[in-house]
Amino acid sequence: MPIVPDVPAQGGNQDDDRGSARPAGPPVRDEMPSAQSYGAAPQEPKPMPEAAQPAPQKKSAGRDLSAAIGVGVGLGAVIVASLFVVKAVFVGVIAVAVVVGLWELTARLQERKSIKAPLVPLAVGGAAMVVAGYVRGPGGAWVAMALTALAVLVWRMTESPEGYLKDVTAGLFAAFYVPFLATFVALMLTADDGPWRVLVFLLLTVVSDTGAYAVGWRFGKRKLAPRISPGKTREGLFGAIAFAMVAGALSMQFLIDDGTWWQGLLLGLAVAASATLGDLGESMIKRDLGIKDMGTLLPGHGGIMDRLDSLLPTAPVVWLLMVAFVGAG
Image (cartoon, rainbow, N blue to C red; front, side, top):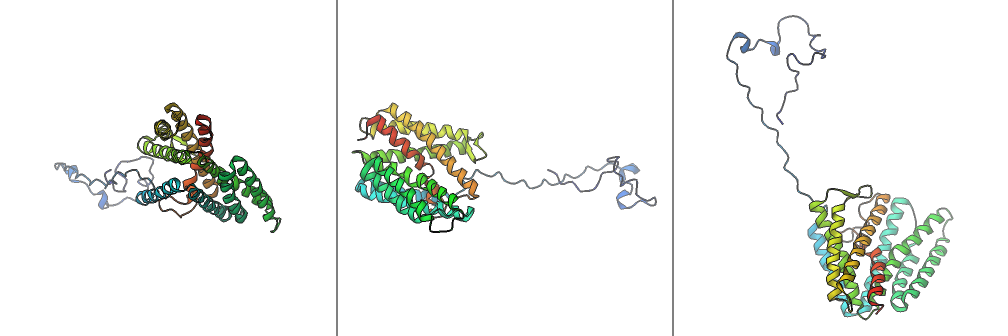
């Protein structure tokens, strides 16, 4: 917009009392008669220079995409290699991710809320939970979960009673949220075509997240849950559903024994829903803690928990639908 001098115009607002307070006497410089009042030809006012307008900003992803893509490709290579070489190695990968995720979660709880969820029994019990699920099935996972909960209760008794209830409550939540949900990935792996089931689970979750990002970034206008995650839009959710359903139909038809395309459509829809809810759930936790990321271990991604947020709640959904559609294997 043109630059306008900050001086009131002659004959301006009549309510401005600055003009009435001016003393009588010879006109000051600003009040000298203009050339137009002596009959001279009026001069055209020179146009004021336009103020420099800021260049339109492009939408930004808010992260270092180069680092994010590089880390994502590296993690994907490690996961696929361990998944199809030796199943037990991939179980170890799950256990390591669980322990690191628990460390990030308990550290943030202590830093931001002074909640001391006992890490040692959680880490040991969490790793045991994953292994028990792979070796002994769902029953083994439940037993390991119960023993981990008991260990959390007993371990915290060695410290002051003050804050005991909130500490053990946070510990039980962490045990369920991270290792117990991750155990369903190990349960998928036990099937004869287990590596392919796990691959489909990972693929659909990544495709859902990618579809939500791509469509939301380009077309997103209506907020999905502004109080929880202002960046998520309804258009992004539709993108997640569409991408996941297409990927699910192709995956079930060509990658899973006895799978059909219509089962893949339902699987993709369920994955899009659970992945979105998982993402919103962790956003809720991070908002309560007042942080952006759970950690800084993965450049461009944040921490391990920032990558597990949509995977953890999706694992039991995919395991259950796979069993319903094609059996336990």
